[in-house]
Every structure is written in C-alpha cells, then in structure tokens.
Length: 394
Ligand SMILES: Cc1ncc(COP(=O)(O)O)c(C=O)c1O
Image 1 (cartoon, protein in one colour):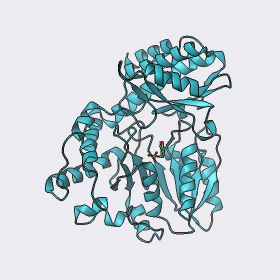
Image 2: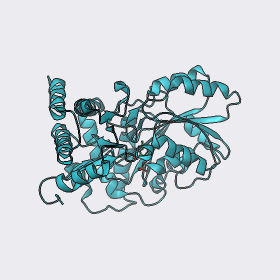
Image 3: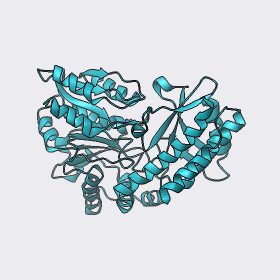
Image 4: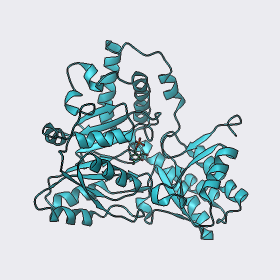
C-alpha cells in the first residue's frame, strides 16, 4: 500500500477530499445541544444554506445520506397511489424512481441511453398526455453521477410550463450543487435535494431538502407516512425539533466552515473552477481516445458534468485491474462504472476540494497506469490537460 508515502488522492465522485479547515472545525468537543451557542450556529447555517441553493424557500437538514433526502422530498409532498414522472439520466434516476415505488408511489420512467441529457420534448409530451394531472411531481437528477451527464433544468421547467402541468419540479442536486450553476428560485424548482459529501466537501452523513412555498403547501396534505423527515415539525419553536432529535453537532461545525469556504470562493468561482478541471479531464480523454479503446460517455460536450467524468472503455481494458493498480501502487482512488456500466467504464471525480495539481496528478497517474498495464491509449493526454488548464488561466 501507498498509504505511508505521500498523499492519497480521493478522486471518486463522492465522498470527496475534506479540506483541513473543515477537519479542524469538526475536531472539537460537542456543545450542549439545547444551549444557545449551538442554536445560534445551527440557525445561521440553515439560513446560509439557502444561498447555496439560491432560494428564499426553507432548507431542512437530515442526519442521513442522499437516499434520505430523496425519501424526505417524496414523503413530504406525495400520497399513496400518486404518480411521478422520472426522466432517465443514469443509475441515480433509476434509484430515485425505485425508491418512490417502494413508498407506494407509481413511477413513469422515461428510458434514456445514459449518454445524453433529458429530452425536454419527451417530458412535455408525457405531461400533455396526463390530462387528469395524475402526475404530481417530475423527479429530475441534475447531474447523474453514474453517467456524468448534466441536464438542462430551465428547459425542463419550460416543458412543464408549456404543457401547463401543475406537477412539482424536484431536482436532485447531490452531484451538481456548488460544482455547477444552480438557481432554484429563478429556474422554478420546487424542491431541491442535496447531500454534503460532494461539492460541499464534507464527510458523508448529512443531506438537505430545500422547498419553496408551493411544495410546502402541497405538503400540508401529503399522506405518505413521515415523521423523521417531516418539514412541518422541522421549523418548530423549539430548536430540538429542527433535527427531530439530537442534531449532528460536529457535522454542523464542519458545515459552517464548508459554507464559509464556498461563499468565500463564491458560487460562480466554484463553478468556474470545476469547469476548468472538467475541461482538463476531457482534454486528456480526447487524446487517450485516439487509440480507439477509450471514449467519453457524454456524447455532447455541453452536457458533460462539471464534477465527474465517466469514461467508457472497450473489452481490452480491465477496469478492476486499473482501479487496483491506481489504488494500491499510487494511492489514487477512482470510481468504477455503476449499474449498466459496471466493468465498462471508470469515473474520475473532480468535485469539491480539488485543484489543478490534484487533477494533473490523478490524470498523470492514470496515464502511468495505462503504460504499466499495457493499455492501448493515445499519447499526450496529460499534456493536453496542461494546455487546457494553461489556456483557462491566460
Ligand atoms: C446524483 C446522486 N443522487 C443520489 C445519490 C445517493 O446519495 P447517497 O449515496 O448519499 O445516499 C448519489 C450518490 O452518489 C448521487 O450521486
């Protein structure tokens, strides 16, 4: 193992590298839960999280991973037998759809090839066909971390408006928040879902829903079972109910620091940095692909995600061997292909606490691993990334 010589690089698309500032902020004794120091801190972070979503709506915190926030969004707005429309984007749209069905909600799933973003025309057509307005929500994954495709939220909002359909628009921003431009209110999103272990740079363990007035009003009459997730009790007079029990105090210390770091960089700055790193990654893949063994999963450059890149490989490449060599010899963790892409792809995370030397180190390590393993690849991938980063700075 490489663990004792040099830094390990966590280049997976969640969890991601945790800044020293956040680690230090969390490394302190817990506070009295009912005391004013924690309450003030917690309320301040709740308020500032709105800035990340760019919303005037309410943000709700959960001690859970992203699956919890998926369930929170649905259980707060839907009733048994309701229907949702889930446009396919990859493994995570499938996961959210399956979760909805497990709660007793019917899901209309729009198949997609995982290589292209959601087709707004198809969404509009499905909504027009639903004359009785049985569909209560459109569940959209902004960036699907499996396919590394980002879909166009304003285009989906427009499709819903053109169809004059009243369904709620719910957006999973788990992989896109902070890495990519996101404007909840301006884009007409009713519910946003996020988790802390990607663009927010925290260790896994917290998730969020943000809900506008329309969603919270619909939620008053929702009849799916809910207790822990319930928006209605999470803004009570007594701060204890904001977490439905003991809050994750040290996570909140970390989150305060994370939000400060993000606001210091600015959301625009963070999105631009992620774009730069993504462009450099794509430049390397473009060169590697010249041997015909490797290609970008995204077929349209503009749809390729800012925070993660999925790279398809042909049968000559053993992804497990590549991952193992990178992990054990170089201390670089990359993601494997998920679901239908298992064994057929690998993924590079460039989200959260990540900069130019980190992405160059990761790309150079991958190129080195190609050579060690005798993987056929086009030459000059790392140099193409260097050129891309240099062009972005000049
Ligand atoms: C886009 C997206 N949605 C949902 C999830 C599920 O989140 P979690 O693994 O935190 O439950 C993930 C996890 O990677 C994700 O990338």
